[in-house]
Image (tube, rainbow, N blue to C red):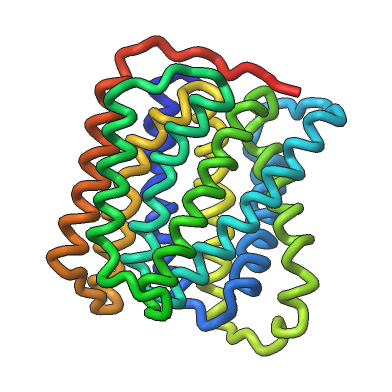
Length: 293
């Protein structure tokens, strides 16, 4: 995958990820059931793709690879559960904007983990994203649904940032292979919690969950993992700044979730900060991710 095709894959993935909150709200099921079903459908989709459409040879996995894939699966499970809790509690708009904080976490953690210098524009990014999150929050009452939902969403963003950095370190593993293994871990983790309520899930809800698994997960996640083997996680953050735009727009059209002027200002600040900072740093040459123990 070249840097140009990687950016194209990221744009497609961003659109699909942007619909995640919408399908999660359409499915009248608990976050645990949604995440389990999403992972299970993703495993089926990825297995079919690997069998009939993928020409990439799978890598022999060593113990270090298994540890990283297990960690990625656990991070992915935590990210999804916390995000869908945010969707159920506070709606698609707040959940999506809270999750959009993940590039700020990525800037800080990438500098610490990979010992890469944090530039001045990236420090500005963190500051502007923080201000944007303050504006997105209608009030600071921890008992309110909006505040608690935003906190769940920000936690989801932190877990997703850790996931993206772990995937960068695991760049030698083919994308489909990595995504398949990670979703198996997610499904196994959530099965004991979701099993008691599976029989009560409506057929229509299984449709929404299936769309989540096949398109917003099986395809989108593999595109994201593949792109991180070529470009930096912070560059990926620029493209994924469009995800809240997709999610909020569709939620407004379908559910009548009309964002307030303050929320729009905060969301715009987050998105613009991410895009500008990423464009300023994109001129530097891309280095392949270094493997760590």
